[in-house]
Image 1 (cartoon, rainbow over the protein chains, first blue to last red):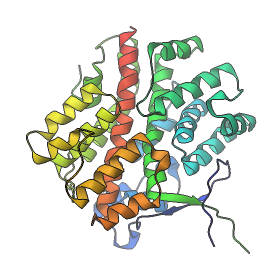
Image 2: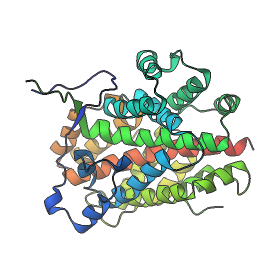
Image 3: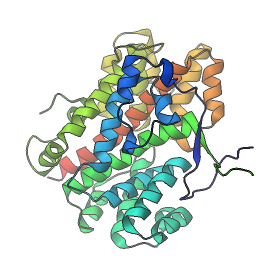
Image 4: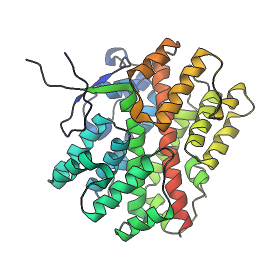
Length: 195
Length: 159
C-alpha cells in the first residue's frame, strides 16, 4: 500500500508519476543528451525521465535550474532555498518543499525556521531578514503575483541589494515552474516500507 | 537593449545596477531564452502547434496581469484560429481544447488544487503522454517568465 503525503514535512517522500517516464533503454539520442545533466546532480529519477518526453525543454531547463540554485556570488545558497520553499508553500508542492526545506536545514543547521514556516506560513516568527525574504517569495508566487515598490523597499531595508533580489526572484520563480511540473505530473507518497 | 523576450518585455534599462546584476547572470538569461524557445517554438512541437502554444502563453500572461508579455504572445499567435484562446474568457468548442484550457487555467491560477484527475482529463481527451509533458512545461515556463519580468520592471523603475 502507498499513501499520498498531504502535509508539509522535511522528510523527503517518494515521487510517483501520473505520466509514464521515458524508458532509458529505448530513449532517443536527444533524450539521452538531455539526461546527461540532472537537477542538483542527483541520479536520473522518474521525474527527469517524465520531463525527457520534451528533451529540448529539459536540455535548457536543467542547467538553468542548477545555475539559479548553485552559481557563485549574489544571494546565499540558504536564502535561495528559502525562496524555493516560499513558492512550494504557496503552491502546496509537498515534494519540492521537503527537498528544499531539508537542504536549507543542512546548510544552516537550524531546523526551527522551516518548522515555523510549515506551521505558520508567511506569519512565521523567524528573523526579520528571513521573514522579508519569505513574504516576498509568497507574494511573488501568488497568481497574479503581488509585488509592488514597497516590497522591493522592504528587501532593500533587509540589506538585499539588486543582485540579491534578482537571485531571490529567479529561485522563487524557478520553483513556481518546478512546482507546476512536480505537483501536477505526479504525487508524493510515503516511501516507508509497510513491513 | 536585449533580443531576449523576457528583458524586452520588462523594458530593463541598458545601464545601472539592474543591467549589471543581469550581466552577472547572463548565462542564466540565455538559458531562460532557450527555455522560451523550447516552450514556444520547439523543433518538435508534437501535438501542440506553435500557434496554440503562443495563444496559451498569452492567456497565461493575461491571467497573471502581464500586459507586455500578453501582447508579445498575442502577436506571436498571429492571425490564426487559435489566437482567440488568448482571452481567458474563451472556452474551447471541442473536448481536446476544453481539456487543455482547463489544465492551463487551473495550473496557472491555483496549482495547489491540481490532482491526478487533471492529468486523467487530458488523457481522456486524447492527449498523448508526451503532449501532456509539453503542455505542463509550457504552462510552468510562462508562469516563471511573468514573475521574473514583474520584478525586473520594479527594479528597473526604481533606478
